[in-house]
Every structure is written in structure tokens, then in C-alpha cells.
Length: 473
Image 1 (tube, helix red, strand yellow):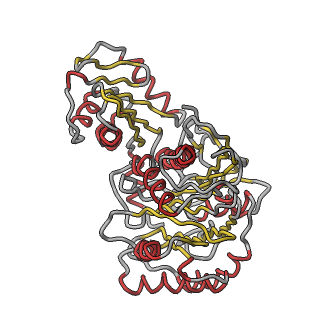
Image 2 (cartoon, one colour):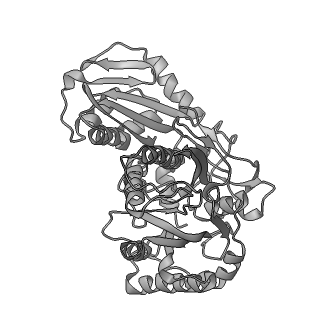
Image 3 (tube, rainbow, N blue to C red):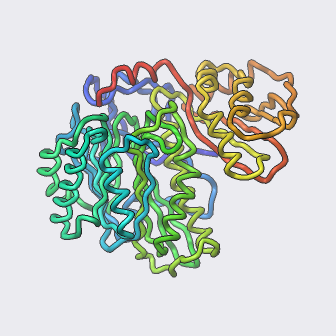
């Protein structure tokens, strides 16, 4: 599955010890760069959108086309990202805002961590009582997690202040935070920056790009994509942005994402669709087995495309929209795994032959999450026994006599039996993927059932430990 890269900038390299240290990635899609260098991009847009390059987006095949604009591609949406002084180091944008011109149908998915951040608690309660929203504010620098009642009051004050500026109700504002756990938002810096942030709102590509950059932390690249398709004969658009690089594991990863669409869909159906897509995307990626306190997916539907209202999951139009939503979320999810801290390659695990989709997905997650398998791939060692082991402890019953494993197009075992294979060729396959920051494909069949599923991860390198030993954001 080819990567569809969206970077539209030229890169300059400056020696620096501030902000994020960039790891060496030989022959990456952006050229060779080192974690000892900061990476800046030069574009025709404003400087806020030019601090880091854009990620390659790996979209599945589908009946859609890529369009520019990210979260602003759909009708009715504006975005902005500015530096507000919240980051501990550097002056990369750290405040992101996405707004809708009309009351948008809202949906959300959140971390399962019991120590949920204050903005997570606030937004879950808000979405429980309101079906619509018009603004999403995200700060980077402080997670505002494990900050008690004071941290929760900070969220309320930030939402209320933004609502006043935008002339909307506080419950129409959703809040997200990312950064160091245990630190409250630098509230005074945030509040004083809100007028400039609102003034910077734009429906342009530059607005979307700056918003996508502003939510990043240890990310080497920003993640943004938009597609256009026909739903029920009407052209609709879905766009999105995401952040994430470390503390990535299903249910959910350490990630934030905002999804926007101009499709017309009822509240109940939209929320079900978002849940399905999250399970097929963000809940199928892993980097290091850590699930964060702040994981959030926001999804807004403006309805401004003029399409008919989708009010049944079983309708053809619903299936069309679901496929588009799946594509956008999977593209963003895979870019997060590709950008995993210390990673040299993306790993895609495809499982077939299960009794149902859920069981196939579970096996795929288990393999993608295996530290031993990930370390072997980093070492360019085709140790497929680690893959078989991880499939076996996934908690899904299957006959090992039906197990089939391939590494790329190299068949390693079939019908539960090990096969002779060219170890040099297999090792070279892994080495080639690592040198190009490409994709390692693992194919597994566990039986004859109709269920299939995929999961994504990355290799586990020495740099992962170094990055997280030194991380303070």
C-alpha cells in the first residue's frame, strides 16, 4: 500500500538543543535528518505552519480523492495555530483552534485510563449533555492530567473565555491538552493568547497546517489529511489532524485527533460511526504499550455539503460515509505509528481467517504490540517465532495447525509447519524498510473464517529509551 506524502515545503536544518531533538532517519521521505538537528520547513504560508514537515499519509484504497486543507477542507470550518508561550522550550506553535460556522453534530472518543486528564473529564460530561459543538481548543506543553479540582477549573475557565470571544455558549467549546502529566495549563499565557488565536482563524490550508503543528509534542512531523467523495450523489469532504509519537497503545494511544466533515448525519449515527472508525484505526496502533491520560478524538459534522441526512447505519449512504471516515482515521493512525519515537519503520500486521473482525483485530494488535517482535525487526532479524508466539497469546482460539505467516512475500510457515526460507533475503527486506523508513508487512492467517483485521506499530530501537529518558517537553 503506497504512502501518499503531503509535505509541500522545502527543509532547512539548524543545529539546536531546544524544543525537540530529532532522531536520525536515513533516507527518509524528507531526506536524511538527525535528532541533533531541528527541522524547519519553508513554505509560502505563515511561519506558524512551517516548524516541522508534514507526515506521509498511508491511505487505504477507496472511492475518494485527496484534497488540500486538512481540518478546513470541509465546508464551514476554520482553524489556527499560534505560539502562546505554553511550551517549556522553543517557540513552535502550542495553541490550536478549530471552529465551525454552524452548530456541528459532535462526537468523541477518549482514553480508558482511570487517571483521565481534566479536559477529558470535562469533554465527556459536555458530550453527554450536548449533541452539538462549535469550537475545539487544544494546548500543547501541559497535559493538565492528575491536577485535581484546580486543573478542572482551569478547563472551565478556558472554555468560558473562548466562548465569550467567539460569542457562543461554553458547552459548545471542547478542550484538549497534551504535554507533561502533572502540570496544569499555563492558564494566564493561554488566556492572554486567545484573542490572537481567534483573530488568526482561517479556512485556508495554512490555517489547517498551523493547527496541526500546534498540537504536536515529540512528533517529528505534523499529521493532516483530507479527502473528497460522493455520498448519496452529493460531494462531501472529510478532513482531520492528529498528534502522537510516544505512549502509543490501543484504547487509545497517546494521541489527539480532530475530524471534520460537511456530511449531514444524525447525532446517534455519527457517534456510532466515529466509534467504529476509532476501533479500526486509533485503537489498532501501538508504539510502546503505554496508554496515556489525555487520548481524545473529536469529530464534528457541519452538514453544509447539502447532502441528505444519514439516519440509518444500514443505508448505502452510511456505508459510503463510514468508508471515508475509516480511511481518514486509518491514514492518520498509521502516520502516528510511522512517527513512533525512535522508530525506523512502520509495521503493518494483516490477519485473515478469523471467525470475525474483532478477533482478527485482536490478533493483529497482539503481534504489533510484541516488544520482542518489534526489537527483532529493528535488528533486521526474521525471527518469525516471536510473531507466532504473539499471535498465540492474543486470547483468540485457533488451531496452530492452520497458522500461516509471511514476511512481505516471503512465506515463513504454513499449516503450522516451519518452512525453509532465505534468511538473507528476509533480513534484507527488513533492512531495506528500515533504511527508507518504509513499511514492514506481516501477513498472518489463523484459519478459514471470514474475519480480517489490521494493526500498525513500529520497530523498537535504542533511541526510544534515550528519547524518553530525556523527555521533559
